[in-house]
Length: 113
Image (cartoon, rainbow, N blue to C red; front, top):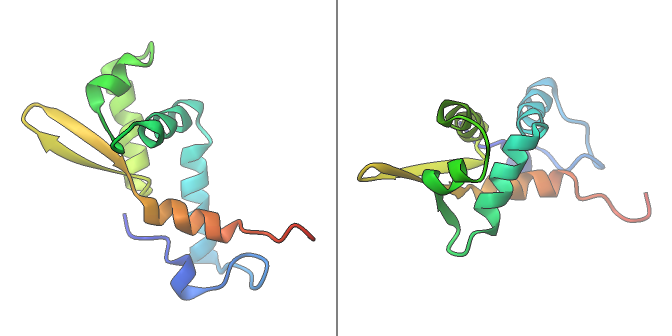
């Protein structure tokens, strides 16, 4: 998944409206985050010391089948929130800080609004 490219292409929401392509990209990310399981997965990865989590630890945190967890991980990777690395028979997941930074900058609204 390519970067949201919000910071390079346009200012945050309060200064200039998103164009249709930018809005569609941001909406995909928020749609992915709108699922409670995916939000929990992201939280598990974000809160782990060292910044990465083995898929075995993610799967163990839910009462869902491995294929269901794999689907949620795939969605998070497709929108650019997670990246993965295979090591032997396990896959390790990390956050993509640039994507989270772009979302944060987009929603950075002054307190006076």
